[in-house]
Structures are given as C-alpha cells and as structure tokens.
Image: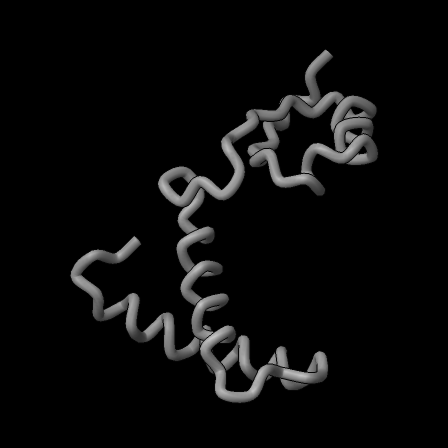
Length: 90
C-alpha cells in the first residue's frame, strides 16, 4: 500500500543505490525516476554546472574544506546576482 508520498529522483548513482531503493520500498514511498543531470527537468543542475566551472577557473584551487566552502559561498553569491540579472533566468 502506498504511503501517499511521491519521491522525485534522478538516476544519480547514490539515488539508485540499494540502500536508497530499500528505504523507499520499506516506507512504501513511490518514486518517479528522471534522467540524471537533466537541466531541463532539474534547474539546480544548471547552477551546479556554473558554480563548478567558476571554482575550476580559480587561480589557486581550494586546498581545505574551509577554502572550498568559502569559494562556493563567494561563487554562489556572484552567480545568483548574474542569474537574477540574466534575461534567460533558469
């Protein structure tokens, strides 16, 4: 019997792992599977792609978790401003 919940997921490897599938089955949660990394169905993929490109273009790659966190926050803040002013908001 269905729990009444519907879980939307893509085919990313951690979403289709046995432990995840088992949890959904145990809790009677129905799932809708989307193609992995599908930016038209999952707009956050666009943001992750933009941020990843920005981080990779850094003159010095982050060496610690804190440096990576700081770079992600800075990139996110700049990216959000660019997206907000873009005529093609995603």
